[in-house]
Length: 112
Image 1 (tube, helix red, strand yellow):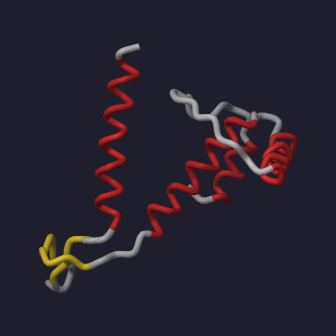
Image 2 (image 1 turned 90 degrees about the vertical axis):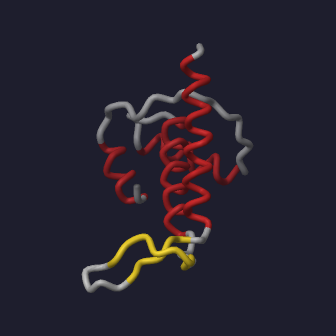
């Protein structure tokens, strides 16, 4: 989700996604002040919701920014019959690790 989409969504006063795990994150005072300002601008969202939304958006952008690295394996063909090669960059590893940790977290949450 892009930051602009976040701002549009924050206009809606309904609650965001449910938080299932908490982290304690030290913030520089300037960033905390900006977070507090956002919470005042968007009273339907508390600081934790805003921070979770911002982090999610940043992680989406990080995942999208990983460069494509052409691998040696052909995984498909385009509309012209040209080969499309697997991504040998960080994206597939990031996605696999994300799925690994998500599965572990969901299993842990199910045990509660």
